Amino acid sequence: MIPDEVREACAWVAERARSVRLELGAIEAYAHALPRDGAGGGDPAAALRGFDRETRVAFVLCLDAINFGSGWWPTVRRRPGLSGYSTVEAGVVDRFRTDGAWSAAELAESSAAGVAAVLGQGPSHPLMEDFARSLRDVGARLLAEFDGRFEHVVDAAGGSALALADRLASWDAFADESTYEGRRVPFYKRAQIAAADLDRAGVATFEDRGRLTAFADNLVPHVLRVDGVLRLDPELEGAIEAGELLEHGSSAEVELRACAVHAVELLAAAAGGRLSPPEIDALLWNRGRGPRYKALPRPRSRNTAY
Image 1 (cartoon, helix red, strand yellow):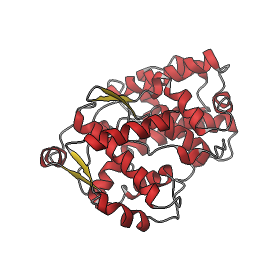
Image 2 (tube, helix red, strand yellow; image 1 turned 135 degrees about the vertical axis):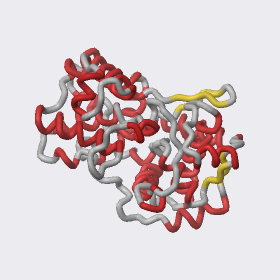
Image 3 (cartoon, one colour; image 1 turned 90 degrees about the vertical axis):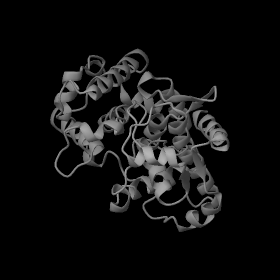
Image 4 (spheres, one colour; image 1 turned 135 degrees about the horizontal axis):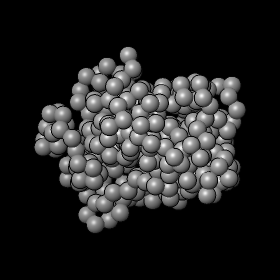
């Protein structure tokens, strides 16, 4: 299963990492200080409560298919008071409320101009074609394998978050692998978070959701770094502080993601089952939206993984 592959590979990278180090002595105290309240992460489709299941499933899968671009956020046209991601989310919500969910056929014909119109961006922004390509893949998969129905993707997983993550990991829209010292390192951040989000939205019940890993992005490593769980070497720390973009797939960038995933696994173990890795991920991600964390530069990389 994909989460087990992610877990094993990230532990392997963490053992060999040169630019990122886990402060193992900080794990136990940090784990016990994590709150239990709010660990579920909230309903990602809350804005569409009252809509039918097919629409809510469509919303989650479409939004998670384009849940990347954090390295581009400083360059996007943001809605007042919203982050880059929240701006994208708001555009998709408005589309679903006004015109309904995208059909599989519409997704299969997605264009940069069409996505830009929905999100309030310029059609020439590089993210727009990246988003359109991902949505086209979702549409093509739905038409070829699921009779054009979003619900059928969920139902085919047979009540297993791991099975759904495995299936989505085979789609180009959710591709997310790197290489480190010649070894394949799968992350599949968005394939896994889609399974968690569908459960959180109440459109699926996945009893094995706690077996997912953390969702490797740039914010959770940032929070763990600020909180002293991850230590960076001076060169990497200086590059991040200077706002330099990290090369996707570079050793340092892979180490940041892998060490964060492994740290969350260690935190879950130290918490004694009180919190699962996805729940800890949600806690740290929400913590990262606070002023203390926003005041410091976070690692940024331009890619289609996160």
